[in-house]
Image: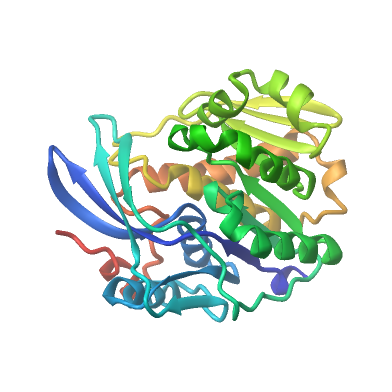
Length: 317
């Protein structure tokens, strides 16, 4: 079964243009789940991506990029009459970024097709895309399909302060996502916006555990907290030397975790038996993916050397 398992990513696509010192230094295809699925593909794990882009040069480059990195595009749309989304990421001295976005509100098209799922697959989704009204029909169908087949559902909140004014209207969808997910992952920044707290144990006990059994809380370079029905564990993030950019680090963390679930043969049925050592192993792989991404201007782990297209896909300005 291990060889037939796959990761299904769903989310927005956006061209990230990176600036350092006020000057553009790189342009890379991005989007939270998009970044994750590229890392999954580069790691050699079977995967596909559900999303869309505009029918323009950026859109075609995005599709080519997915395919060249081993990601299935049979459920990815190029939409006529729509422009591809763009973000400007301004890098600080420590590689942290602030963003400006230029995009239309996400919305579902009538002719969308959904991937098949089997027991052991991993559905990876999150961000504003997973809670906004325009995408709810698609997200709801995917979550129902995952529940029916016994797939592991990994939900990355990735909820930023620029959407704080929409929190009240989005909260019902966020809570529904909690209910239908196997694992909820978020950063202390996310939870500070949503629940006005950065205490992982408090957040799990008060807000998460009633809906979802497994919880991962990250805090940048600080410790990672994992909460389960049988106990909570804390793990230290390995130090990262020569940080270039933190853009995509959390997304690669998600990718590493999803890959580790498959590599270590963990399914929905076996998750209740996981102890500290098993969670440590999963988190270790996730941190390795994130650390590798921090040492590059790309939003994903390094392309394997056997794929010469991988390095060329990074467009330097």
